[in-house]
Image (cartoon, rainbow, N blue to C red; front, side, top):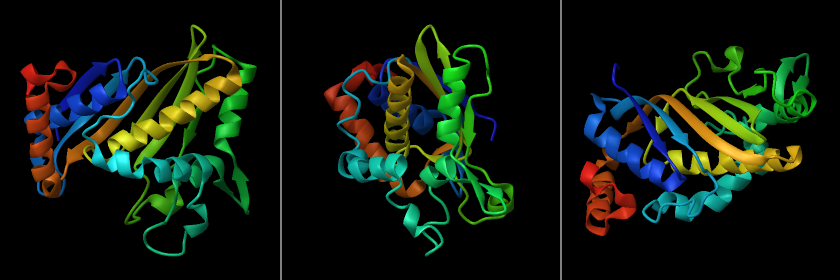
Length: 231
């Protein structure tokens, strides 16, 4: 996969609409992933309203439960009890295994690091990948890393993803993680800064193409977010 792209927008719904259109037009075809590309996205004002795109039915219906799963760990108790839950992001970020039954709350450690050394260090990160569990696993984590830094009294967040469903998952991922960004910024007594999102492979699965096509037609018809000329 050689195709790579960059998108910069003010808000989350602008970014989601732009990335769906970009992958639809420019993505490389893959039998497994449909249309895919590597993509870097910068959202300058992740908490500027509206935060949710009116055309994202999945987020409109499922965001409340997903928020609790990511931020409160409501599905952590299901880990290991079936093939659907080999891990959760919340568990990996707050209960990362260190061996000998020891665990690390990476989010607490990350926030403490920012409190101690607010602007200088570039070591403020949390990871999800556990090599002994994830190498060769059928469903390893898509989110790989969260990196944060305070710049000009604003908390900037970067996230890195190995593989991602653009149409059905990206929007909820970003809504939840920017809420985490807000929680951390509030604890650190700073404002929320930009959000940077990188995917090694972000894709539109073939099984969603009919829905994607309808979505783009709606964007054209309603002239949503001024991107009609790019469709």
